[in-house]
Image (cartoon, rainbow, N blue to C red; front, side):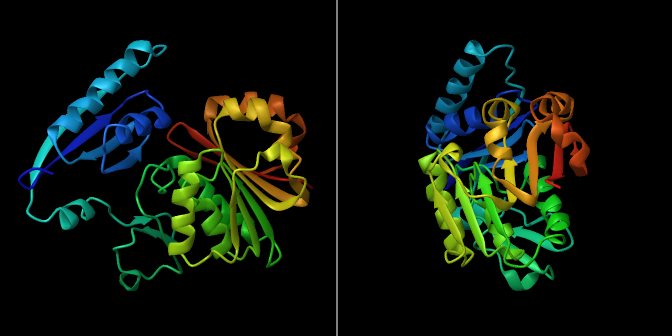
Length: 286
């Protein structure tokens, strides 16, 4: 940051994927990234040079993308003598439900009445709770947990920041496995697990889902439809008899494609949530 200034880029209505936005941001020195909704981001930079490099990368990605759209771009230069206090004020506590609030490490737990206070340090791993699919998974988990015996087991496939695995442990899981093929995501997930004091319950691993033989009481799969095309049956095979799978990361108009992949699941859907264009299903292996 030069002379107390820092730059904030706001993107609205972009069709570039979250992975591409994150890649462009952090490969160009972003200090942080905030996901505010579908296609809506704020990205923070210490100076205009890093900001301009990020915007150039976005333009390159749009030029090679198939019908990709950059959307509306707004750049703001903010002056402040204390970067830490300025940066932190942009991360508002996020109330997911009456029971759950998501906080950053610098926000006081004692200020909120919620039963569960989940701490996530904003970073390049997606899953701060601000995306509709993450919020729906968390809310669906609250319903499903009521059906499970205390000490139940869970696996979070594509754990990202670890947020779903952490909430599973908070809600009574005795054994949680979070897996991801992204080493950087696993590093951030480990930090989140430690901050929340759940290292004794949650194991994190890069092992592929196809190499796991164990069946779980709850499978968490916040993944896009392309992943389900490849791994759909392997994911379902990890759901124990009488267990549950929570599926999100898919659009409402992709539900039929998912059912075509797992036709036997249609009659076992117990909960269906929607937000914006996104869908979340809770399915019981009855």
